[in-house]
Amino acid sequence: MNRSAKALYAAALGCAAAAAALLAFGAGDASRAGDDALWAQAQAFRRPDALPYDPDLPNTQRIALGEALFRDTRLSGPGTISCATCHDPSLAFTDGVPLGRGAAGKPLARHTPALWNLAWGESYFWDGRADTLEQQARGPIEHPLEMAGSVAEATARLGADAEMAARFRQAFPRERGMTADQLVRALASYERTLVSPRTRFDKWVAGDAAALSPEEKAGFALFTGKAGCSNCHSGWAFSDRAYHDIGLPGDDWGRFGQLGLGAADHAFKTPSLRELTWTAPYMHDGSLHTLERVLDHYENGIVERPSVSADLPRIHLSADERDALLAFLDTLSSETPPVPTPLERLREQPAVVGEAVLRVTQKDKQFSPLAVRIREGETLTVVNDDRRTHNVRMDGSDGAFDTGAQEPGQSAEIHFRHSGSYRVYCGIHPAMQLAVEVMP
Ligand code: HEC
Ligand code: HEC
Image (cartoon, rainbow, N blue to C red):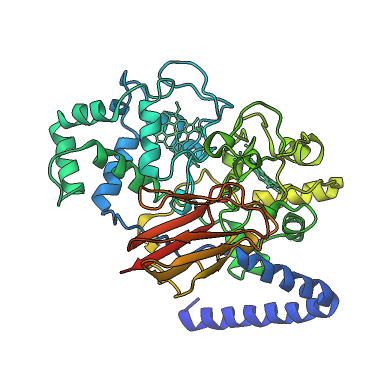
């Protein structure tokens, strides 16, 4: 077939498709309108087209160094394991077992999570005890049960390797000497690039109506409707990045250990639901081996106690509904073992400019506006107009602040004495972030 014949053929196919669509429209008018409404709803799950702004702009050498370090066993005390031993890139950055074992050969207290989409996180670990990926990376290296080493020793060991030392110099061209701080920054830069790949669900959200089957669409409708999953598994990564008690049995206190608030007892970070097919078993204790068991938990397994999340509905699903929900969850996973989105497809978002207001609201787990600009000496009022208990906080030596349990209806006043950039957040729902720029 020559080129113009090919074009004609394609046009003819297009006409046939249009005619078929017209025919189908008469019959399925109502279902198409339903589809459109569902699709409109799905826009809340659309992928961002860029990585969040990173003040410590990494270069490609630094990211490549981070990847090499991630796989380097010299980071562990005995030199036997690396980050990749537990977060195996060929197993979607998990270890495939309920509880992994570290350098000491003993089982760990919690299940190894996958490492997708960390660049959007505000706190790390199941209980959020690390505020940044840089801080997080020190944890496993120095934990006696995990890598049983020290960041300083690992840096010295790597520094003795001339090729490694050269890679550090290239990765941090404007800095003097090779430091432990650079080691964790390189690891963190690499981890921020672990963005889960596009799946069929993303194709549908982007406008390809045929990318999901009617059953999968019905599953999405349940997910955001009757089953209430999106109360917590929201946004494109399917996590509100908040801490909830979903009523799993066990005596791990989770986020309570960090906040000391009853509202955070047994609360763990909502995991992303991307690439679930490849990341079993599930939950902070690795106790549920299949997605069927996860649904059993949400239907019949909830341990009733005061700390159970206000966002957790009590549900019952028919056999067909369960099948549809499982079919939908499948569309969030790659069809072959997932590999991170290539670096050249990750753009970066610009920094946000704040609004000049003195009052901020908290409805639906979100500060509004997200960024404010005020003057030195002014007081910001943060009003809880949500139906949830929040815990407004600010860290740092200059004006650290903590409301404790801030119940619906209560306001908090934060006084800013000095100019600078501040970050206000909720301890229970740390994805609630408010950037405060205080001008002199
Ligand atoms: C022995 C197994 C093991 C090794 C080795 C290990 N991790 Fe982990 N990792 C875990 C476990 C278990 C958790 C969850 C612990 C918790 O939440 O209390 C975790 C949590 C994390 C998290 C938090 C993810 C999230 O969603 O909050 C990150 C990031 C991470 N590890 C990165 C690393 C890096 C970087 C290294 C190497 C320096 C590393 N891990 C080495 C087992 C391991
Ligand atoms: C109240 C908030 C909330 C609701 C509602 C909710 N989840 Fe979860 N989900 C969580 C939290 C928190 C965890 C982690 C709990 C833990 O490990 O202790 C979790 C864990 C999971 C996991 C395990 C993921 C992993 O990587 O370990 C799956 C799968 C899951 N939820 C699916 C669902 C589905 C399907 C629904 C709807 C039927 C749902 N969730 C409803 C908060 C919620």
